[in-house]
Image (cartoon, rainbow, N blue to C red; front, side, top):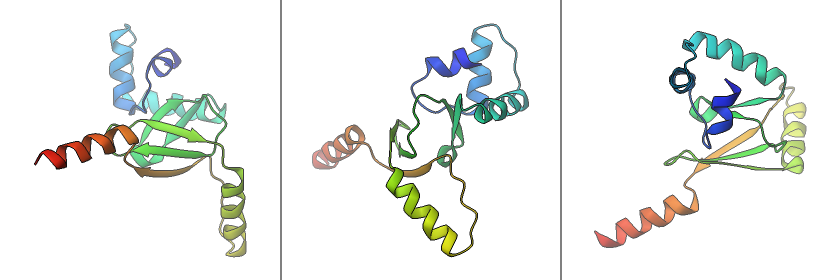
Amino acid sequence: MMRVLDRVDRPVSAYDIAQLAAVEGARLCANQVYRTTARLIEKHQVRRVHTVNAYLASSATAELCMICEQCRCVEWKAMPLLVGALRELADARQIKFAPDSVEISGLCGTCREKSTAAASCA
């Protein structure tokens, strides 16, 4: 399964992972993917992108995950001050805060340009 995740450049769902693994001759069902990704997440080899309910090989130790709503590209940024501020806020309100990442979504620059170009043509 790590071979599949290492080949993709965008978060993929459990069903996508199963289909991509089938191309390589491995027969996996979504439940097997969920169990395996859970173990790989614990080992910090895989990250779950909650916003799109998908998985990605863990290549960064960054905390901020920016996701394009259109093309689903992901960019990671190290933001220890942001996570510290969120942890402090949660602690003050006695909320358990244990993020593996903080996620924000919007349009990436490429998709925003395409959207703007399409709007100007209309």
